[in-house]
Amino acid sequence: MAAVADQGVPSGTIMVADPEIAARAQEQWKENLNMHMICPDCKEVPPNLVEEFSSGDMVCGSCGLVLGDRIVDTRSEWRTFSNDDQGGDDPSRVGDAANPLLNGAQLQTGIASTGGSGGRNRDLQRAQNKATHDKLTKALMTAYKDIDAFCQSMSIPNKVSDQAKYLFKQVYEAGAFRGKSQETIIAGVIFIACRQLGVPRTFREIFALTRVSKGKFNQNVDLYSSVLSTDPKELCERFCNQLRLSFQITKVSQEIAEKMDKGGMLAGRSPLSIAAACIYTASHLMGESKTAKDISAVAGVSDGTIRNAYKLIYPKREKLINPEWVEKGKGGIFGDMKNLPTA
Image: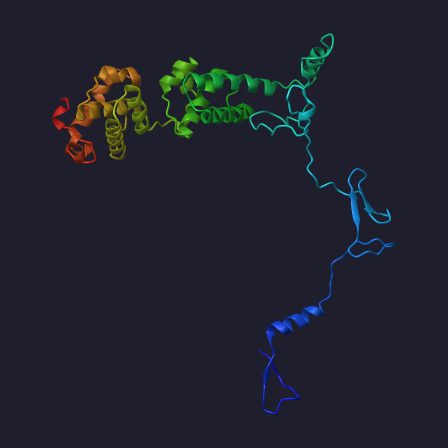
């Protein structure tokens, strides 16, 4: 802080200046570098300026002198004409956002087939379609319709369908499956999309729906190697729902499948057979027994395969089955080891 000596104060006395007063004193002499537009004739402060967006001019509102031209209109760009339409439509000047699943900028204007006299609109629409015909976009639209139909028949969510379309577009543009049938590509992208988004679907379900043989699909297995694995834990949940089993059995079967995965017991076994065997074990343990034939109808594997997979579980049942599951009063989940059939 600065020390200031005052002539009216006896010598030896020191006065301290207020920093706020000193700061305000400095601001009074600060140069103003802002630029203001004023009318050279009126010289009004503040100026009375008017922006005429229709002509793009800056005009003085007092004398009418033009002070600038080519003024940029910063107002909203779009307009609607819904009040003028009898049908209640709203033809906005701004179109829809670009669809990333289609090809090109998608900025073309479409001609409606209805209206007009003598079918002229229909003729104009045909002429425009011929002039703007895009083979890539047409092929993509055809494939997207097939993907939507397959996904709807399997009750697959829309997010999986959109992901499958995106994968198909990437594969089609890259030409990675050139010479392959479109059904094979669609089966592959649906299978991959299900794995990426956590919606488990088995090979057998995809093959039965798309009518693509397993041999044709396996020819391209190298391209799908990173996503071919199926989690038995997820399959257990879906199979138990189809069998209308209780939540306790679903939870027990999932934990058995998880322990088998961590213990390396899944080597050489199909995830379908492992999931079916876990459900078979959990249903008998909890007293809601399901036969191997009942589970095979849902899992898509034979009852003999389920019994063979169960032979992997039965010798290690002490490690795979949590002791709390067979103790009454532990979270409402309890069973009996004696209910398990001998392998």
